Image 1 (cartoon, one colour):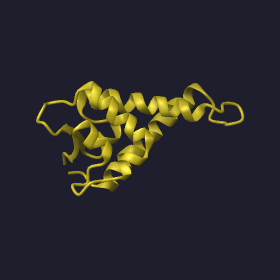
Image 2: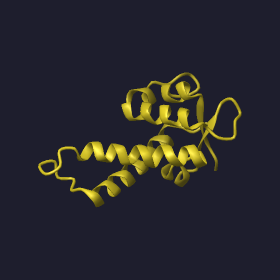
Image 3: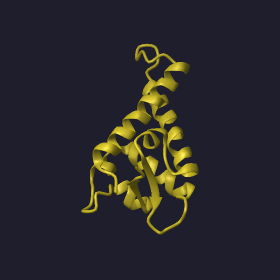
Image 4: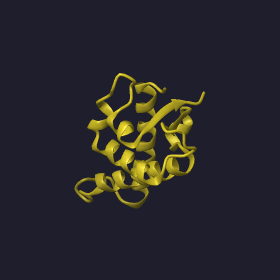
Length: 118
């Protein structure tokens, strides 16, 4: 299973990618765009959910050699579970509360596990 530090680094990479893409469409100045944070969140959500559903990993996960797997042995995680997992990550608290196996509430709710691929 992947450690917390590597998972946090992958999330940070994904967040910076989302920030950069959002900044291409709107200025990050809060005086001009007070909704810019929501735009970053929306871009991050799509950049995370779509590749995890399709390939099992976001860009940051791929860079750090991580992959999301279903605990029930399916080849891919279903879109509904990916959306649930990503929404719970966006709430922030579920990934921080972890069980004895190191899985956060978001992974337990979506019946997933993040593993190292290299």
